[in-house]
Image (cartoon, helix red, strand yellow):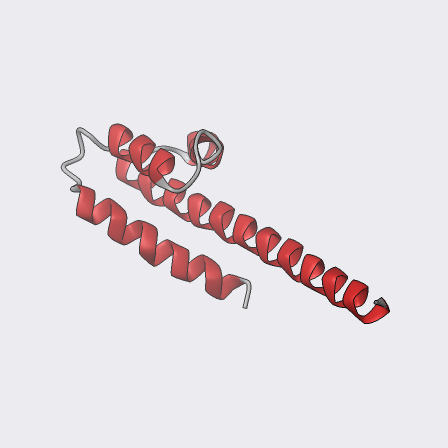
Length: 102
């Protein structure tokens, strides 16, 4: 019985670690997305920091990445950026963020 308890605790620790890593990767990806959009919009350094925070906060509105996508799409509606371009940047920055933590 003791081995089962140890195994259970081990799985719980791994799950918690994996979830924390997902959160960190997602936040870092959103930071990169915020920087990219800020440059597209011509924001100065101070406005860029505020915008990055707004992208990170947007990710808490609903599960998944659609909330971030919708925000960025709305913010770039006058910049002639396609949905495909946004999704490609999201994938690119997701990979970059993953590599930051590996």
